[in-house]
Image (tube, rainbow, N blue to C red; front, side, top):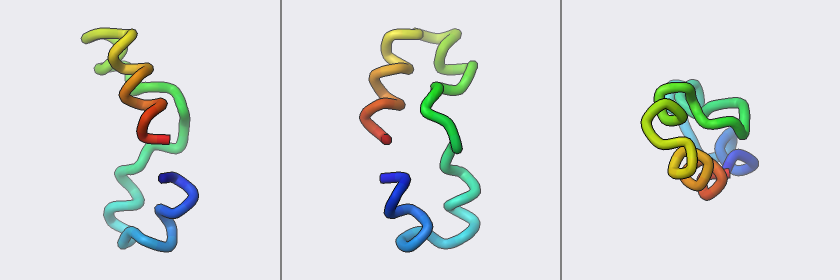
Length: 43
């Protein structure tokens, strides 16, 4: 998904895509296991 993002998304949406494979802190605080699974599926 990240590899195709620059070609497929407008610049304003591209700014919303995180640059890291690490889940955001708010997801880790909610449920660390779910956050890792969610972020790895989006990569």
